[in-house]
Length: 130
Length: 286
Figure 1 (cartoon, each protein chain N blue to C red):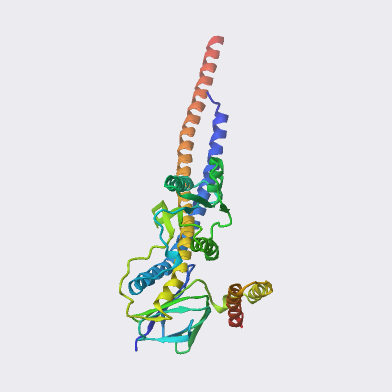
Figure 2 (cartoon, each protein chain N blue to C red; figure 1 turned 180 degrees about the horizontal axis):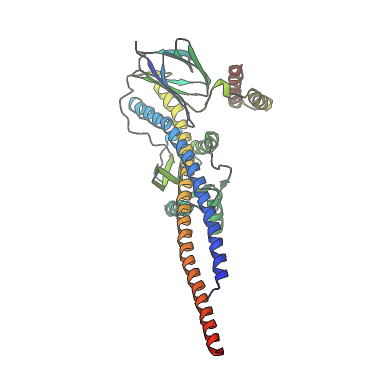
């Protein structure tokens, strides 16, 4: 079975470009993994963690904001608005931002949902930094 | 006739200026390289988004989204003019501002109310001088525009567009074509034009479904569009400054050369005159 071509790109930079055995992605309807030979797929991703298996014992982790994945002809393109490597996350900064978001008062359901969404991004980052 | 000392002082001052312009040239060269790198690293993302959109446009023909609302005669428009905070970069800012103002005039002539949003001190100062009202001016975006900054602008545009407060958003900026060519350009941001549909992805599985993916893609395409105008403008600024400083450096070199010649001529004339005086003095005695 051939290898998968994976690229992870945000507008500001390209985080990964190269071959991989498999890549696990956080789809909005649940996480899924892509192996070589996967059928064409366009999926929306939510903020979460991408696990990329470059080789048998070489796993890379990326923490992403929401975005998309496009699987086509053995190529996986992950497009996200922002992404970090776990070692780039500053835990105290994220914690402060999270506290800030949680201490803000919101009115109405949509505002509450938005606040939850914003908080989620930071929670994921904090847990990934550990 | 200037005295040799005066000319020498002038040469000295031009030499100092040349030193500064040459340094600025080198700094701009380095900065433009970094800015161009940033432009290039944003390209895969935007190309891919475009590809996805055009693929999806084929499979989901009649998507209706507030961001796609077309209006034949827009009532209110926003023009965002992207310039730099600093000058000394040739016609970079003035060309962009001129194009923006022409566009504004054109829209007003068609009966559209125009709101001007400005990035960079240069446009803000110039428009203030012309007494053109500016709704919003941002000077925070300097050498390194971040995606978050672009997102703020894009999101406020999208919100106002969706609520039908505005019908058109255009960005006037310096477009980066390649290292040798950057030109002022008007980019249409809203309403978004869906690229021509191709059928390349029509057989793909959509998760959750094609229409929701398009709807999620649209705001991203707009945000990345705004982001690109900012980074391309920064690249254009540094390239323009590098060229301006290069010209200034070589002009200073020319000036030094012609002034040195003048200095030598004056010096020789003075020596000749002194010899003539001594000779004629000696003749008068003997």
